[in-house]
Amino acid sequence: MFRDFSLLNRPLSPHLTIYLPQYSSLFSIWHRFSGILLLILLALTLFLINVISFCGLLDFFYVLNVFLCTKIEKLIFLFLCTISMYHSVNGIRHLTWNLGIWLHKDYLIYFMITLIFIFSLMLIIV
Image 1 (spheres, rainbow, N blue to C red):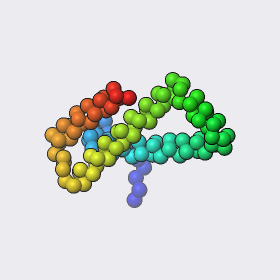
Image 2: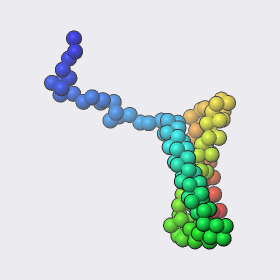
Image 3: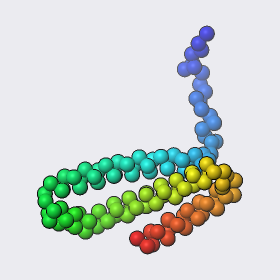
Image 4: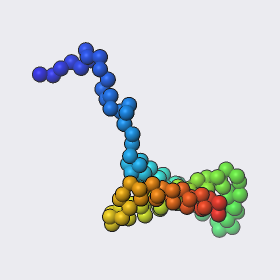
């Protein structure tokens, strides 16, 4: 009834070598990943603000000023802003797809060019 597939010298999934992922599935996966990452970073930020707030109001603003003035924290803040921009723009894309707009393949490519332009514009502003 059950065959011993270990005796056969065949690959398990030969279609994976020729598979090209669709843009919509990749954007959906990255949208979920960015949402989880934003949730984790928000919880970490709130925890750190809660810990720092026990120092007192003046010490809180001093520690916050020292924390935000270093280069690595500015890069982390830029990374967080980039992820939140991506998540919000991709969320708008999901909402428009739910309304039945931009479902054609040409609109997807046009939308991605627009998305890249918006990202570059926002990063220049920051």
